[in-house]
Image (tube, rainbow, N blue to C red; front, top):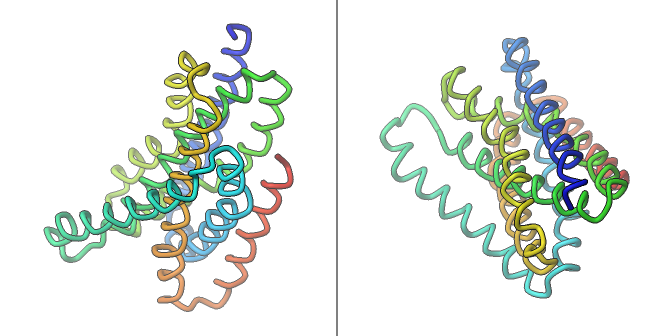
Length: 242
């Protein structure tokens, strides 16, 4: 197991770096990002919903017979978190809608943490298996960083706060998940990982279906449907590359 620690850590750090580059890129060209952020919202909805239904949910169902219950639990928990944010945060700042940024960020952060678990597990099986998994997983890191930062901005957070929260949730959580899970990798069996994956997918479906798509429908931008289709296409590419 010791021989696979550094490759797994290296892959998780690479994922974090790619995400951070995405955050930096959109911050550097922020005016452009704000103008076209609704297209990133549509793109994100396409990616998150499609990856969940095409890969994460089937994989979770395969690994754990009780995964459907955890899928529902993940969806409901994020809904309850959204209700909490709306009741206790947004009402204190009525001119902003922090839930638009916080709820997706929570879902993305949890998913990125699970990504770190996946790196630990796949590299423990073999370096080759880990590299194959990493190749597909890193593909979504760059847009994930962009999406997280922009959603936080749209939720009313300051540029500095959005930068910090996006970096923590979308970038830092991946190597953190790898470091947390690696010492206990022998205890993380397939049913447990399946439960975690189902929780993650429930959260991601909630984010895509109840937060991102309604935002896109409100603005009715000319190429929003095309952006949604592009997100679905990228998700298909990610799934086929794994």
